[in-house]
Length: 520
Ligand SMILES: *Cc1c(COP(=O)(O)O)cnc(C)c1O
Image 1 (cartoon, rainbow, N blue to C red):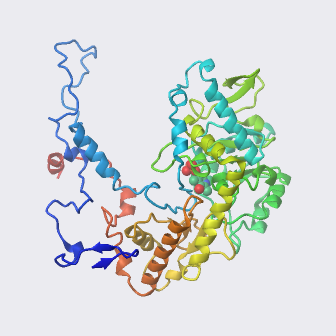
Image 2: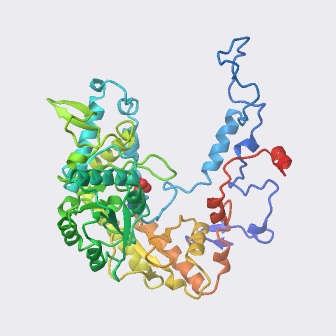
Image 3: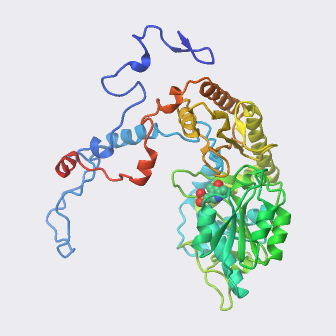
């Protein structure tokens, strides 16, 4: 009888041959059920709803009404429910296991946040409701803004940006406006090579040329290279701190002074704020603008393209250029300032309404339930967990830089040299072991990067299981068990996909078999 690592029987002895080689008649494998596309499951003659016969009526569409079926899949209610339930079981999710994606900060979203976001008085408001009827919501936005300003030590915040990348756009537009007000928007933005791709993309979108600054041998911004590029053309620098190698830029204050002496402004990418929240205030480091990914640091859900939220905090110098709208309090009542005054330098709007209300509620619930001491502990535990992972793996894997890390630890592929296994194969083998892979091939400054962020919400047990799995895979790779890696994942519903082809030539539309046959 096979035993799992806890000594429980995992497989009976009386299976004919190898269980993995059993072909089932249905294609299902026990509880793992095959599921076709919804168009293949459905039949247009079936429906989950009954419409009354409309009888004879005169459609007022000027002869443009449809007469042919529109090709919706026809499913009864139980068929629809089963289809989506089966698909959902093929998903990996933070509610199922550890999600060690570095830079993404995939952590537990406390259920309290969800409960608060569903309180009817908050969940059911509409952005066009009279302001007198949504005083509580406005107060909540004001309170969240207060927490964000306090935690960052910055005097102003724009709440409406919808994600980190959108916050970068907001920040650089404000920087551009401030420089234009001084009479010269300048030409370039300096961005370290390790930066997230959204940084140079944002600078380019705002009309700036991008100057890449190399990292030094310690994984930090190369100060000499940086100062050499810091001339009268430089509008801003965009620096992530802690950076995407998981390292604190310890010359940040010096860097900020040099930026300001050169007449430029300092944008900080705040995606890694969870590593320093409650411990360091970016305002004290000389930052002029920084986005905060509520969906990373403050535990609102993300992934799968769901709503994010990326408020941007501003320094004194940039506050007058922050976008509208914002909430103001007058004589105990809250109002939304939506229109600029005549002499206002504020940017216009970035979005139609006021921001992601549901995310504001969740983030504030998270902050208030932790309190300021709890938020400090978030940072401390995130850093402790990442260092535990690094310390437990550094004898078998290759950390890219010496010394302790912040909230994530970076390895490169030197430990795989000569094994025939590459970072991608290693990540795919992790899927067979039931883990979501870490971030790979990012940052670009090291070869075959593996960036691991356990976050503060994982228990020591779950981190130990992860470490054990990583050590076992490392041992397998070094002992020549390449087959385990080269075609992995073997146990996932769809095995190894041609990801390049899928990205370059995405087939997003299902074609009925008869049409496909006719086209061939
Ligand atoms: C996630 C991330 C971003 C972009 O944030 P989104 O909310 O995904 O738009 C930018 N920079 C870094 C370092 C990030 O990790």
